[in-house]
Image 1 (cartoon, helix red, strand yellow):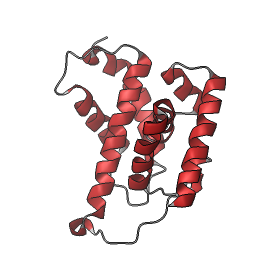
Image 2 (spheres, rainbow, N blue to C red):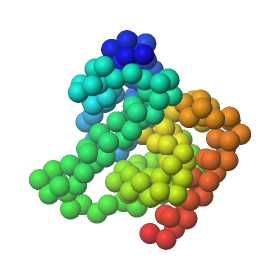
Image 3 (cartoon, rainbow, N blue to C red):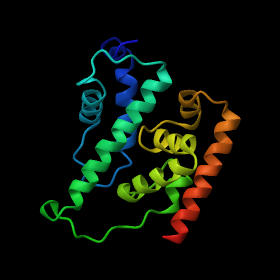
Length: 170
């Protein structure tokens, strides 16, 4: 399905996911859910309107990656001196790997760790991106990845364990 045909079908779901994700961002976040969805859409299709999506999962994985990049860029911008950077970064707590209602997260540290995790297990990294950056629940993320719930349970346990160990050594 082409992008211009798919967006009207998934827009409300993307907006709901973005809204849920942004409620968990650090206080003072100026990005709105609608703006996040629109920015992700522009990145997904602006230069490639003829792009075809293999499946719903393929589209949502790409949308999660686009939202991840947008949020990471916003976090990097906030870190610049001109944007008030130089403030002490808060450490990434293990709550990111343990619960869906996590407090503020160091998005830049998480981004780096997801990249490292992808070197060890790309599917586990995709699961973390879908759960954290796209705001998907466990069952939704498993569906997007095209894996059984039990496989997603094992993969989530692996990702949480890996991230927790990585966080413990930083």
